[in-house]
Amino acid sequence: MGTLAVSLFLSGCGGSDATNELSSALPSLALTSPTAPDSSDSSLMGSLASALKLRPTHDEPLSNYKDFSEEINTILTESTVEECLEHVHFGDSSPTVSCYGPELFFTGHGADNSSGSLPSGDLGLWVATNSSDGEACTATKMNASIQSAANLVNGSITLVAALLCVANVKAQKLPNIGEDALELKSFINGNLTGAALSTASITRLEDNGANKVYKTIVEGTVSGPDGTDDAPLYISLTHSPLDSTNSSFEGRLQSAFEVGFPTKKKAYSVIYKKSGGTLYYTAKELTAPAGHALTEYFNSSNEADLSMANFSAGDNPTASYTRAQLTTETNLGTVYYAWQAGYSDGYSRVFRATTRSSSDSDTGVGYFGFGPDLRTATSSTLGSISGMICNWAGPAPNKVLIANITQAQTMSRNDAGLFVPDDNYIKYAPLNSCDYDGSTNNWSWSTTSLATVSDVPSISNELVSYGSVGTVDSISEPTLSF
Image 1 (cartoon, rainbow, N blue to C red):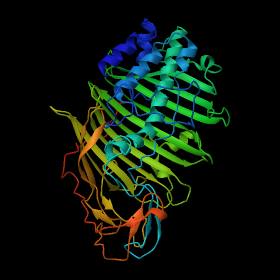
Image 2: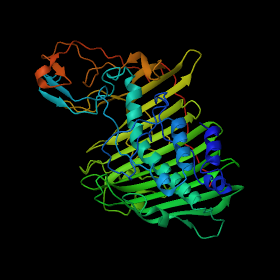
Image 3: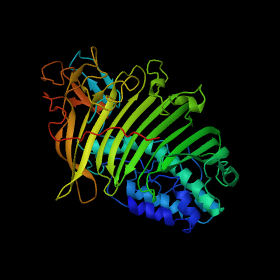
Image 4: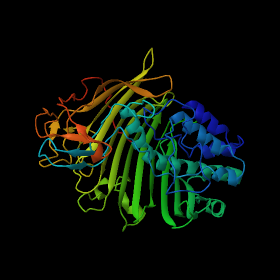
């Protein structure tokens, strides 16, 4: 929504002078995918419970930037403390995508005549579309993957928005440089179900040149949807408006909390910058064993420390990296998304996609492949595609990377607002060569069960080199001036 969203922010919560000032501590920031559905009904915050939920029992659809900006404005326009807080929600889930990486049951494997199954998550784009609605599998998987981080980040933004709304309802003002922090915990505790906050404060830091800098800190405990298992929570938002209307801005968001059974720690960080109608952000997400203070899951650059994901320890860690450049009015743009999970996982799985507006419809192209280990990759290699591994978990030798080869789809938006495939370059055989001549053993497979396998015909892969069927724009990580 861009400038419109900011103008609504500045008139929110009654349109007082206090609201104008309070709004400058908050970005109109939303993590989203350039292939998100074009629908005003896709709001992430559309059906939220009043409790602060870290272990949700349902999935929320991925929001686009315009929808999420409208939801933030709704929070800021509430007139009571209870209304300010009823929107706050953290999710930590993403929908299952059947077209991507299904479990594959087989007999008479083409490599060694064995029977068994290949685990889910490693086969890449297995079929071209999401069976339920025809959406391109590239779009479906990217939307679902980014949603996991978006639920957490957007949840943090809604909590900060709720704090600012509460401050406005209580006629509070942001502090000046050198003044005590504006402490809001007394207004929150007892009104936000399941929360016991030790800190909910906003401080004005030293100016960055002519630009103000605000820091919001939230610490305390929250509970799961059943009201039990209080879990520590930490949120830090440092935000600087770059103009008088907060329509251009920059900042850093960090958060960490306990999640899951057995207990683990999840940490994420976002570096963001908005200039005019373009939003740039880099997000890092980490799930690792408990055992450290929440703030210790961040490195010296105040980003989630992906090196703490010990993929050799058998503790099922996860890590992800997102780099994006999006036009806020259309939600179109470019995203690099990489993730890594599980024991002895030395590669990241990577999507790169760009969507654009054309004279006829929105169009896009996406590539999938394997990239460098997120623990050791540099800023220049994070989110890059090295090639394709067709035999990830099959009979050894496996995990053979073929350089500069990827899966790809070209896409266009249909009348329902979904990106659907135009051309598909995804077919391969799960063997080291990515091809199967049909003459070895009696290979049969099924994504349902061993009882339903059918013969595998000869397969010549249709994989392509990166960039050969459409251009994904080159984008850089945003850098902050403070």
